[in-house]
Length: 415
Image (cartoon, rainbow, N blue to C red; front, side):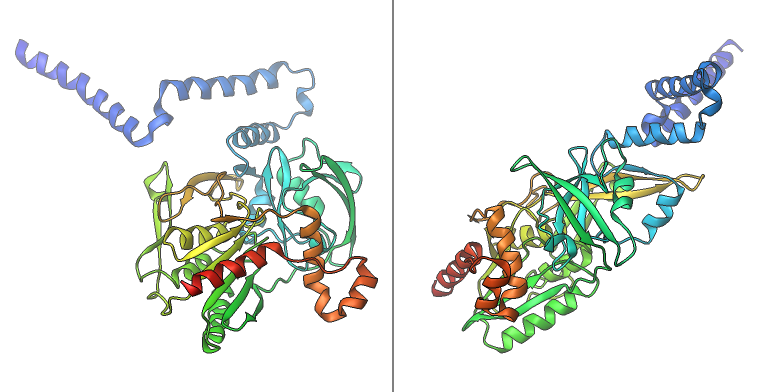
């Protein structure tokens, strides 16, 4: 009897311990003592505010909770954020690229809405916006302390409407006032295709969209029919976009099934590989990829992958360093949170986020040179040198990065 009682008591103690241990394994921190303590502390804070705050009747508890969650998420990294119901609905219909009324790709960095890159031909690009510029005022209103989406919303507006805004340029410590007319942004993915000189082809990709891969293949086939012996792929100021387009384009030079890029996160469900879906393209012609600080996200995936397998040399300056994965988690209320859950890695295991991709040949470019090149590439050919000089006040400047890329291709063709 006594032995049976001991066994019963032992089982009665061990089963609850096993259950708690199992739940702890399954739910991790959710059942930790620390989590319960912090959760109670948060609830107690809300209760004390409701019961004792002098203006408690003017406090919206749901808004207070949302602000607390937003602050928590924003303290993690620049891409995690709280999405109230209206923002959550809007986010579902957005692509990874944020098309604003001024045509720029932006992200939250250094506690400010920061320009990753203006889209080619957009009002923002033509106004002289550069990668790294930070939005500080919109219509004379300081954006200090605003949430990321509040600032983005201020930048948006009907096509044809006027907007004034100011940017802080860290490199010169200057605040620049700008005024543009908003418009719907339609950006062609592959803007320039042709032979720079006999045998050396050139393709410029300004973003990665759902049609970019097909456009790229058509361009490449055309060049190969024209006896392509060396290729320059220009990804400068390309802010990225659709992941599958980047994987497919880089995958043209990988064996079928080989890993082009992969992700790793805390949760194993975020560990994914993205293989090439087609056999490697025939032809051993040398490739040079042009990159700069405006090359981000999908651009970095292509550049890093081709560099890793030795298929391409990179020329220019270090890329932006945007290589994280965000997942949307929905609350029952309809609100949501956008949480960074994984990081992108190149085939050799290099992390992209915050690190960027270093070029094989560094060719610095000043802001003045970049601005002039943007303008002359857009208008020089159509206007002619004389009319261009009269209209814009400067003679055409050499594209030093492209010149070096040409030299690298020529040398590799000889080898």
